[in-house]
Each structure stands twice: as C-alpha cells, then as structure tokens.
Image (cartoon, rainbow, N blue to C red; front, side, top):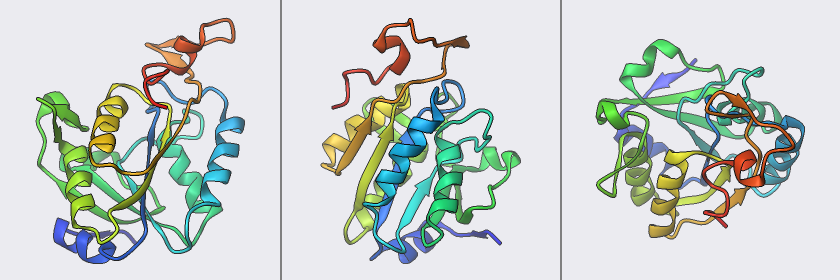
Amino acid sequence: MTLCVDFYGLVKELKNKNVYMLIGNGSSNQFRDMRKVKGILKKVLTTVERDSYFLYFGDSVEKDKPSVGYLFELISKLRKDITIVMIQITKAKGYGIPKFVKKVYWHNDYVLKKRWGGLINNKPCSNTKKWVSLNNKLTKGIRKIFIFGGGKITLEEFKVIKRLKIDYQYFAVERKYNKKEKVTSSDSMRNRIGETYKKIE
C-alpha cells in the first residue's frame, strides 16, 4: 500500500538515509536498446548501498515504451531492499501510482508551462524545485544522480546538479525516437543520443 506524505514527512523519513536519483529519457524519446541500458543499470545498482532510497518523478513504466520510468520498475525487481518514493504534481493523480512506489508526495507548486520541472528564469520549478529543497534538508544531501540520456528538462536539471555540486554519473544512451521519428543506426551520434550529447560529461 502506498502512503501519502507531505514534504515534512518526506524529509523526516529521508533525513539520514542514502538517497539517490535517476533521470533521463522520458516517454517521448524512450530508450533504443534496453539490453544495453539494463546492463548499465545493473552495474549502477552494485554501487548503491543497501536500504537506500530512490526519488521517482512519475515517468511512464510501460515496458513496450521504455523510458526512465521503466528503469524504476527494474530497480524494484533487481533490488528489493531499495525504497522508491514519488514526488509528483497533483494534476497527474489520474495517471495512478505504480506498485513499486512506497510513499508519494503530491504538490501543487508548479506552473502549467513547466509543470514537470526544469528551470524558469534559471530557478528550479515544480518537481525540480522539490528535489532541490529536499537535497538541502538531508544530512548527506542527495548522494548521487544517475543520468540516462535525457532531453531539455534533464539539461536544465544538470545545471542545478553542477551548481549544487551533487555527485552524478552520465550515460550517453541512445534514444528510440526524435520527435516521433524512429532513430536508426545510420543516424549521427548526436541524433541518436539527443540533447545531452557532449553537453554532459
């Protein structure tokens, strides 16, 4: 059963825990080669302490449309000791809550033009603003952020990650789609990877 918590309840639970994030390709671009992505994820999980927490932001968990959300589904199966908590806007309640989510923090702190997160006038908004606030309240901060490709919001969040000096690891994984066009092996690496190509090292 998933429990709803407010921001202070989330801080209280995570205060002295090892907290991680995983961001990257969403449902519009997806992952092109899940076998490769799954291999990377398995290696990543060997570096994560037992009984750690991961922050999840409501991305689609559909297996046939593999995005960063589906990676959380895999995490829940590969590492049953890891607790996944969700931070999401109340407007998205209709999408439901995946079974792997143990606790969810719903919020109304967003504007429609940037409802999922990122930056407005170089300041974090929506879900980005919430994880930044959480990072500032945690004893150890967010331990590390794993970046699997990604689009414009990922690039904006990367600016925040650098600004806050949060440890991160980037993987230049290929996307499945570029604006609804299927990416092929004959495309350039820039097109196969997308917005984060050579912008995150």
